[in-house]
Every structure is written in structure tokens, then in C-alpha cells.
Length: 90
View 1 (cartoon, rainbow, N blue to C red):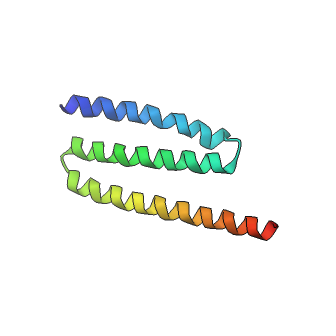
View 2 (cartoon, one colour):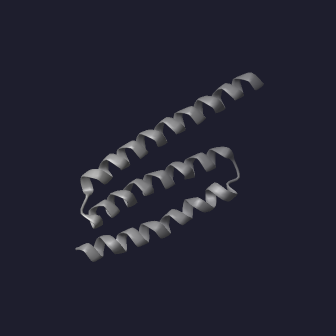
View 3 (cartoon, rainbow, N blue to C red):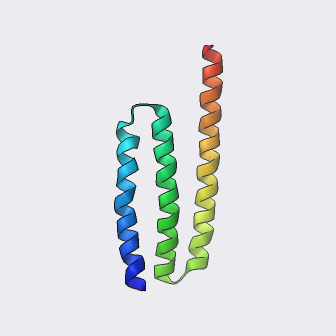
């Protein structure tokens, strides 16, 4: 069972590279924000898998919850900034 989670973590790390391309070469800012949120979601799952592998799942769940809250608040701040800058342009 441990090898399954290890392989899953490796595959998940490779899958994170797909939206990373969109972050670096995205045509619009909105594509980059969406890709950043996708990377954050996959990172949360990856941190939880690593916590299971180390046998300290309780500690890593706390870390992932804090990471998820920070990612959500960051997305809200960026959305608020973009909406206020568009209002100023009009």
C-alpha cells in the first residue's frame, strides 16, 4: 500500500508540470491564475500523501489546511484587484 502512495506522489508531481506550462506561457492573466489554483490543489493532495508516507498525517493535514486557506485568500485578493483595476479603466 505504501508503494501505491509513493507512485501516486510521483505521478502527481509530474501532473503538476502541466499547469506549470500555462503559468509560464499563458496567453492571459486569467489563465495563469487558474493554473496557479490547479497547482495549489494538486500540491495539497501531494502534501497529504507525503504525510501518510511519513506516518504523521495529523501534522500534514494542518499544513494542507493552512495552505488551502492561504491559496483561497490569495485568489480572492487577486480577483478583487483585477475587478477594481477594470472599474478604473472604464
